[in-house]
Image 1 (cartoon, rainbow, N blue to C red):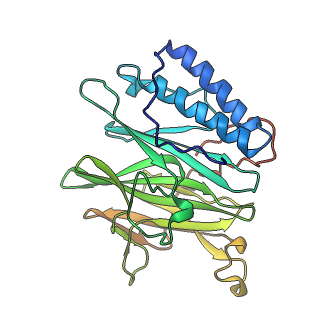
Image 2: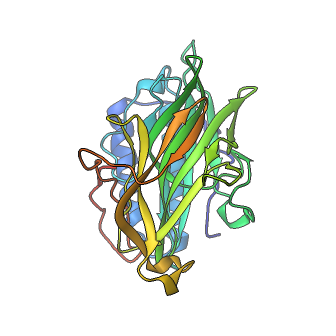
Image 3: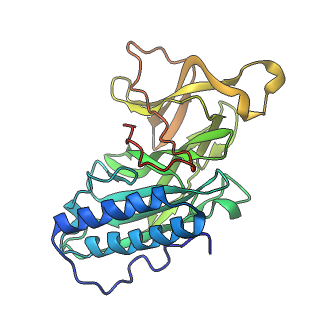
Length: 291
């Protein structure tokens, strides 16, 4: 079996050990995932990693337990500290990626409340579809932006990297909201073009050898991103030939929505959000790049 899912994410009977012991065990398993010689071993080790992570999270009040020693796993807290998102990818022999993750909620009594994120990328016919945590458009998230209305967050914009294939990478603005206590991905709140319908999420695809800035810019109060364009007009729609044209667009939170602002002028260049890429043929653990 090529991929181990997360449907059993919170089903482990192991007793919790010391936090330092968890860190060491997870770091060793992570190394084994990324040094594995083939898909079967790689995903088998990833399944062990998932079980060890859940064991660590079952510690009382584990919401504040950090995982800073890990290289490939991302764990990002929402600014209001109501939840955090774990997300990571496993490269395949075919040059593609499978994504794994979970949302951990902050609870009043410190008990574990966890929603597994099951990568449904291959089955999503409509990239704009609204989905749940069991049919997730997998990404590795590095930033969470709450969008407020009347002083309360109405949804969260998750900014993420999505390795695609041997030729292109993607960046994602995913919209996360909670309805009746359940996570929902996608919401018609993004103005993707000035005259178009509202989008549930935005996905940007570009040449794998390039990078794309996508980040929250405190100075402007907007999500700032590189404007992507083909290297020549004949390549329109062929994303292998897309890269930044050195201009910036942005999404400005307005009235509980994200409004497109084109050709943004910035006093300082935004902090680059570097791609986090692992060649499936590499045998060493990569150095984490800062998003």
